[in-house]
Image (cartoon, rainbow, N blue to C red):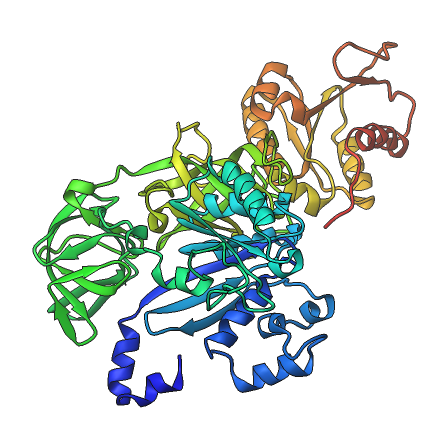
Length: 578
């Protein structure tokens, strides 16, 4: 924003003009040292959008030349020490035609999650490629991520042209190679241009050093690229954020229009309930309008008193969505702790929180080859296809059709940390997992916390219950969590199995004795993998083909308990607790 822009009119007219400017979000990605921060610093400097203190700091700390443009965006101490971008840096600037929000993202592979975060809302991705090095694996990786995140426009800036004497041949070679690669990706358009971010060539103004290039500069491209159709303008989607009820005569539903448009008199459906009504009024601040469109924040009033609450979705009747519980999604994993398929997470979709299981990981992306690799889980910075089953139906569109209703985040319900970002691919067949309520604690988490696997030790034979309590004492003293369950008769056995099942789910070691053992019932209720059978005999037999047989005759109770404990400890070793 130039000072002349402010001085040529009164402040109210200026603010009104600024408010009505179109907003474009873009993200700069690329390999380490390709010049992302320098490009953004040059853009801000040449459009007079750098504060004087920032500019003075960039001059004072410049390693060479008058200004180190990268220091304008690299604000973290660690970034300045290492000369790299670590966190996502957001900057804002404006020109007479548009407002801009920039996300400068890291180039290192270990910061893939930061790159995905910065790119998630962008209209344009600028990928920088070093003219000397050509197309690298990291360049392909970032292009794939940008396509996966649904960014419609790609600008490939071949940087450091000054280091190859502004020759056309390196530029054309990179253009040909990268064009072949992005042909299989989902960008609306791909534009190539040669630049020198350090010298400012083709950044804001066209450069005389590249007479063979007749296209726009970076800024001209950003000012003119058509983003009107980036919003889904066909399907009206309105996630209800808040119900406003200041008095008995007013009931409005506040939120931001995710896509499409709505006008007074439109027939709408509240999902997932399916209740129908008509739009009575559209309120904005202290006024009302006849029509609203994405991404406006408005309050809708309906003609009928239907049940609508936070998390519901209002849509047009002719564009309704079928609620579903199971869907496939591409997920970027953001947490140090890997995805746990046995755990229950929270997902935030639009304005609704729903408990869900991420129970089936189909594949993850090999970040070097971009191949799909089979895996049981996702680790930090991994991107993979996961089947998600929600405990309640949700209403969504595929991410490629509607970013507003096709995206979600994954939240660890124990720590409340955001651990994943998802893009819905399509509805999937319901596989039966996560029916009803489910624990937010997985079996592996319990094992890690308690320090040992859950296992039911089933004693068969003539067992003195005092021996079971002696075994319980010794196991507890060395760090285990056992509990004695003693049953007499068939009816008591059913209750004992139920109690043992609860103990196993809690991560404990039930020590069970049945006077009349039904092996089939034990395996069916507890699971054969969760059972350690111990048979105590009263004759000379020492082994059987099923489980472990022990002859404890002649041993005092303490030594008999020790012998049993050795078998249990060998089968269920202690682990280091978290």
